Image (tube, rainbow, N blue to C red):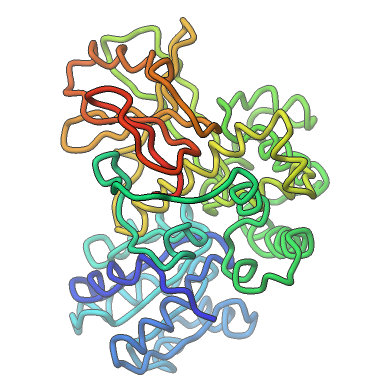
Length: 405
């Protein structure tokens, strides 16, 4: 079963403006599936080749010109990071024949891929990021960038137990479409594939047990400020190793670092990022939760709920080809005042709190007043919560049902 992806329109748009389209994202989020589906939509027979196969990868690395001669365009090349040697030759070809939508490249390792793209395909490639399925995609709704003013006045029926079932099950396409596949079996296999293919290709992990412990420690801290030195100490590795391993997880699209709001005139702002897993099912598996009800009643419930909300908001922007790094941040100062999320859009600040309750009051807005000293317009904000309907809290803010994201 194919679930329509919100990013389809952006892929089509990029193919109409660039000769190369690059789709980045973690393994099994559906990069290849959506591109092959797009070939049907565009009415074009797009060839497909994957560099996962060692013999094909070897040809691409050792004789890129011959490799490209073997396949006519338009062409999907899967896992392009395994053969960055292809990129200069693709550049030569698109410069010689500047036809739009010639090459569609996918990559599971954004950082290393972007380095090579910057050197070879600058100005020639449209770059998009894909994550696991969003709630809107699963429910067949239009995917729009989340802003408080986009919330429609209608009922969004759901219960906390329903939400924690979704949090526990995760949103990887195979897991969503195969309901009989248990999260434990799926994510166990997923981690093994990730370790064998992506991690070993990027870094020389001498102790896979420590790497697994490292990523598990991160999962247990999802939704929290990242104090990497504490994690390194708990795992028994040095700070440099921890930084390297974290960069792999970020570049692979498994982990997202939400940066703090920065302003030169405010000295008391905390400067550490907050860490979020982009798939809550993986975070639950790594932090050893095997029951959604137990998770719902645990001390980690709030952090996992927040992780789910933040990841859904990130997906809403990524599906529309919008950069999240310049739009999304959080606020915390040395006095303990915190705003879970600030959306910066058109020079305006939209403050967002996240609460795992159905009823919220004005006290949830108490820290929004700090934004008045930032020198920017403070626009409509609110509290994302379990309320079934949008309810005004004051003239500028409202309770926002989770179901609308």
